[in-house]
Length: 468
Image (cartoon, rainbow, N blue to C red; front, side, top):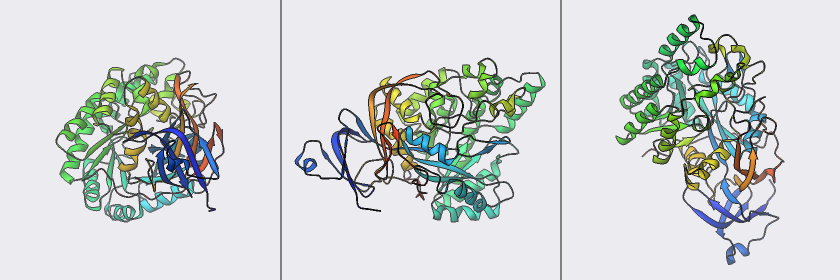
């Protein structure tokens, strides 16, 4: 790479710990220094390129720790692949994703990981890492977990949901947790009681309740809370840390809060769809509710207050997207007449940073907490900090110039995700990404895309940095 220097001047630099009017010096893809705007140090910097951030925020690139690009589900694939999905992420100010490589039952972890490397290699506009989904816990895969941790795949996801697909029983979960307790890995859990949910699904369909809205009714908040409780107890028995993905229900937040009050290494994420959308969406006419089918499901509005409170009190530490889009036409429609066949997932990777900025304006969280939830803590959680998630000397120059006053309307007409609807169609928000650097290279330049497939590098991860 040729030697290059860039200075970003005049912005309000916001990290999880500080807000300061400062210039940022970037050299060969890394942050070299920050210095107060107008100071003799900053004034003395020379560079080939200067970016004017006056009146704007300068923030670290977002870290989305939960995406599913090119993921097989229910006889189809998520509609964003690694090229389109990472481009959309960049448009939204996210510069690192951690996606999920999937082990197939009867196959090794290595085969699954190799398949995901092949999907992503030379396709990504931004940097990426992988978690590993365990679909088949046995003596062979338990041994493989140790090797993967050494290679930088330091987190393993299991499912208490989806019997017959990804489901692991309590014995398998305990064995895998014992392994992460020993090798330093992090257990991630989809916490819903899938065995009980399947009974309710079967009963609903037998009674002719087939519309999308019944998806929300059968996946009960109590069954999310029960599974969250069970996952916490299994993690305690194993001595393993636990990260619960896509928390949507007040009762599940309460389980996490109780565990954390005991000082347990238990963490939780939620997603923008649970913070901004409600179960009413599942009842939209003409099968429109199918657009909002995801698991865990959207909940009644009263759950949102508990989620925001959890984000403020640090009972929830991360906002990820669980980006797993399926087009309405031809994909979501697979479930017409049977809600259980609607592919589960929603688009969102492009809007997380903006929606959380809107949450700052609406008084739910502070500016620094915005950066903490979207950048710094996911980087720490998944062993990427301070390379990612902050702007300090030595960090990758993953940097966003953010216009806090720009107004935009979210719409399928204007988003860059490869999906034919927006979950937030017509929603007006204030704040917009203007310029995005990934390792010092411009990916979005004043609202023009300049990135390319293949710039993004695979990034091995260390262990979770939030454990004592």
